[in-house]
Length: 544
Image (cartoon, rainbow, N blue to C red):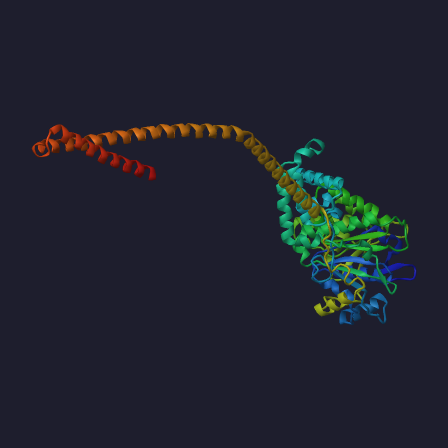
């Protein structure tokens, strides 16, 4: 509840109302306590009080309970009993203007960012990279910047890693060794992140953090992030919120001291932010927390134990609400003592003992005064919320999403030209150039071979002529041989015929007269017969 002097009525103790000073609200805060002690209700009370003052808030909704802040609350026996204690006669129940967001785009407007906006340091934490792999990732980002390549989504970063792997010799001298093992480890981590929905988170349009600084009807808009599914990946959840905080710090202008903050950022389950976080990143978080208040942003961590936060961070949280802690074990007892020691003591009670005796809705409260001095710790009752306690229905959520002023702004994913497309085009161009060069080489080889063949052609013609001439001579010789054989054959045939005729003449000498005359006739007849036989044989061979 907002008071006339821009103070926020949050709790009530024996001494009266406990107000959070508006000017000191950007000095950050802590809401701590065991599960079931009322931390979520306290967060809701703080948020709706800021809303009434015109201060927008961002909060992560782990179980869907905070969605009720969008609807008016209702009177209950518990609230009716508390009204006289708080001096409230007729509470005016009302909801707050709300915008629902969801990294996965299922229960609200999608919230995305790009690989380049996330940066290598936060991305290395998200991918759980070691120091060497983080160094390689930094080099990849540097090369992408030098080449003017946008890293928007996971495929862009994967393409860039492939490019660096193929050209690592070109960059080793300038940036240092980049082993294939380190690049392979980053690629595997990217694959795991993609399986967890990282391809939905890293995309465009990227979320505009100025949409968190919205007002409607003079009241601050409550930006509620659905985190029930996101919580299944604690690294993604905490790194995403840290990115939002870092982006606010980077983009918001300096405003100095204000009567009220420009934005209040609630970081629920804050212990996840510091689990397995490098020293360098913790130092960056400390720097952001220390300096972001000058941008008009107050950060309130919500966790179980104050010891969940590093001392360097805890020391910057001036406004504190401590719900009950249980001291069943020595570790719990130590945590209670540490929590008690962070408060300015009140002589009226023992702080350590009081922490273990607080009931639901009760808390130890200490806020900064107008001079920035921590107030004495008070045992108080937290004001009840005027909005609905508990989740709304899915149909009510859908109706609020559809009526939002930013409906449609982030719903459709855009894939513009970036590192993936550029490197792919370069690879295809290089492949075509290599193919064209190979074709040119082949064409030149064939031309050279053809020239050599043409040089050899006359020599082969001369050789062919010689072979033809030799063949002609050979044919003539062959003709002589054939003719000789024919003559020999003919001679043999003549001899044989003459011999036969002579024998006939001798046997018939008494009948034909003289032997000489008969032999002569026989030889003539035989010769004539042999001549005819030879001619027929020669003609037959020529026809063949």
